Image (cartoon, rainbow, N blue to C red; front, top):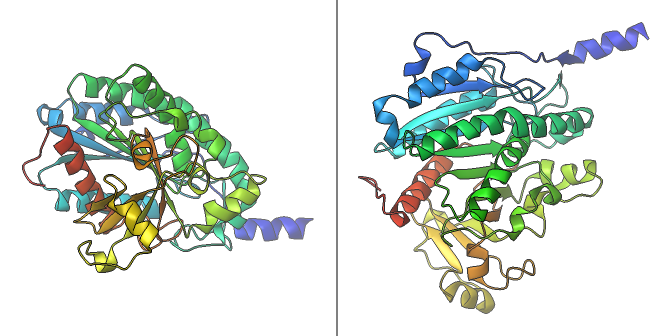
Length: 371
């Protein structure tokens, strides 16, 4: 028994439920903030939020856009965490490709894992397939992710919704990955539904990247149509090459389908040949006919991505217009756009988000100085 404990302690390192960032007198002047939550879904330190809102109250924030990222399984808010480092870089890249935008970055941290089993953790690899074998922690962390979303993060979004409505902040873009997608979904789905039920145009955008959520959790968002019939309130992006969510997650959840690998899919997204959407390609006649219908095939020309509406994926979607009017778009994404489970927050993703925000502003008649 003693030998077993020694072996376990050698390879399994407990991860404390702790705060990693401590605000000081300069934090309110920063364009990068961190807010952390404990396993009970409550803030570790309300001073972190106070510093964020002190920044938002500054005179230039009426035009500011808050880009929020919440990490998933195995990650946390440690300064050396791979997601934390990647998001810092991502915000800089987004600002470089969209210099006309006034961006503030917000990293949401929580304890994404209780233990670090050294031989199983491949969260740092885009194509990692060993990660889902760390099954003893997924069930408990999944419950915590939902609690964090429904409690602390939802309360934070309530405050952010208020400052957006008051004109102190232009919008926020909330990105959640893996179990962070679970946090984001459970923090936002009721507010998305409420806004639509009230006929209110929600200026904010929720992006779920390879979210570890089931199709059941996604309901009732599948019944909602966007208010303006143009911009979805939420976009789910599921890589077709994501083993962790598409295969292992289904197995661990007793056959339940992940939302991005289910009947919920509304669109497919692929990269144009060599990133150039003007390059002609040979398509099957039925697909060419589909793409020729207005609204059935859309392009992000600068990013070189092609988005195709998926017709008859479910009973409520019988046409491309039906797919495009959904309040939530669920996109099956080619592996050369999101590589595996962890291939996120790349320079091309920053460019695509900048292009999407420009299109949203164009349709809302809020055209930025440079698109």
